Figure (cartoon, one colour):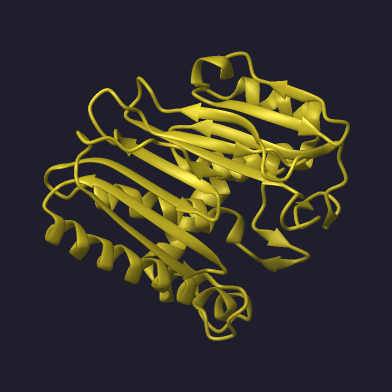
Length: 267
């Protein structure tokens, strides 16, 4: 995904930063506010993202999640964020009837929710800076948008076409809302990495990508993963049942399926 907002002479001051952590690149774009205060908040948020990696990474033997998995720590002995994320993950598992899970081949693995949660948390912290009118935080293609980048100009996010490299399948607009997030799960960039929690193996479906749009990235990131594992028919029906959620599903046969209200978010 890519931010497609055009610049203009009337646009508020922008502070941008890119940071590599958690195995991907996080891009921060903050509009308005006093630049020094915004940069201080950006530094705080970046440190927080690295801290999330230290706590939650399943690739680091010394992370709290790895130690929790081995039984060396209890949840109560971990940072408070661990209990928060695990509670959110349990709710996502309940809402998805088990299609979203933090159990990966019998091991604790909350990475399916951590990135979206971390991006949303970062965006909300940046939006607290006095004078800030718009925030765009992109974590590896999953985006949380708050406010607007300028007067009469909504944030817009391009959704990559998984079957046509370099092309766009759609452009999502945040026009008319104060918060919007966009998350995509699929096989185009990372291969068959999504697990079917009912088999413990890679999900085998007719889909190549699911993009979900809604207010909070914490949830839409989970919903995109769960819907992909379900397949296009069951996934679309389930996404239609969720409040404040729209979605675009693309099959391996190049068929595009959308929720009923998605058209209102395109532009």
